[in-house]
Length: 88
Image 1 (tube, one colour):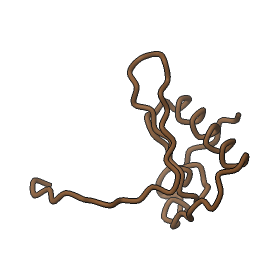
Image 2 (cartoon, one colour):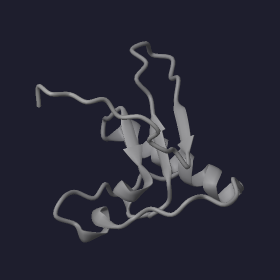
Image 3 (tube, one colour):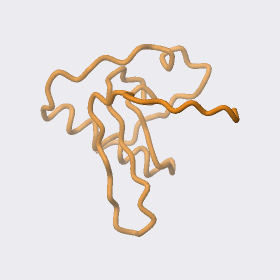
Image 4 (cartoon, helix red, strand yellow):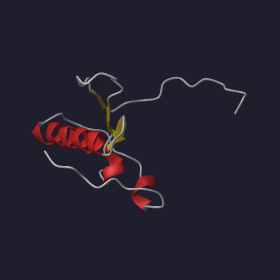
């Protein structure tokens, strides 16, 4: 596993549209593990592949508050609902 550099605004790659993952193979699993290691090192609770310069639809999340990690891997996530928040 490897810790990757996290990109920040105004890096132009962050505006790129991420592509769907066609197959979950060893390369994708290794990337997800690298993303998780990078996120924990930051420290953070979530990281998208585009944030490390890879325009693929992958996200890792871990909001556990215990020492035991409970990561969640999102592959090709889609927003299917949005609320209408009038207070913003």
